[in-house]
Image (cartoon, rainbow, N blue to C red):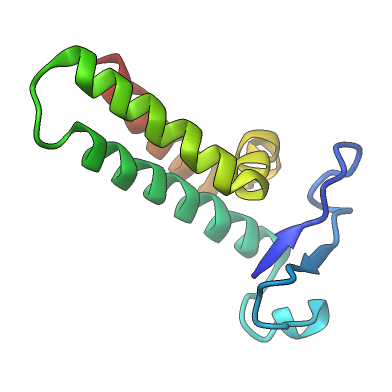
Length: 120
């Protein structure tokens, strides 16, 4: 899997993508045979991250109407995701302003759905 090189000082335009040790072994230049640009890659990563979080949230809320149980499950799912997908979470938090429109609005909309569900 490709992941961003963690360097808070680099913006998306300057960030290089490195191969994760457990990934398929795609080299940076050959990545562009699969995606057209860093913008597309960033969009795909951020949309996928939000979709995964929304699915985890749905699963956490399923099966109980008890607010305290729902809250505990949602928090556990959120923390577990961020702990096991720390690079994706970092990019999702740090790089939203680097997205161009309409991708930025799409991600913000998904994030809003996620936050509204938590707020009840």
